[in-house]
Length: 84
Image 1 (cartoon, rainbow, N blue to C red):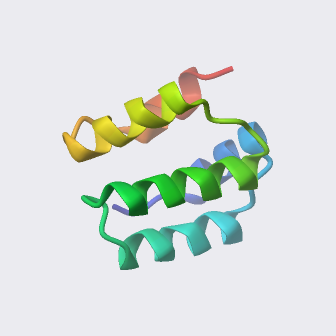
Image 2 (image 1 turned 90 degrees about the horizontal axis):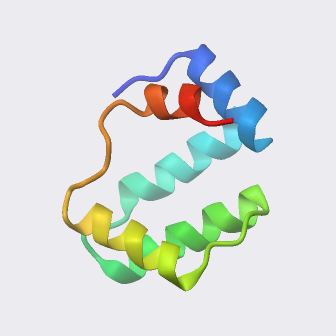
């Protein structure tokens, strides 16, 4: 899936995380096993640290379950636009 510069600008505006950091994290995701709970939790912790946002244990569990059960939205642009 290719993302436009506009997508990265929206993400950066909302999260203060720049395109280079996002791409670096994406490379890590490509090399990891996203069906492995420990890998997913490591990525969640990385994102939490990068964005400066705390992720509760409850939220972490929901995210892990969504990823393991393939319940991740395919159209992320929609979620970036809808969030305030």
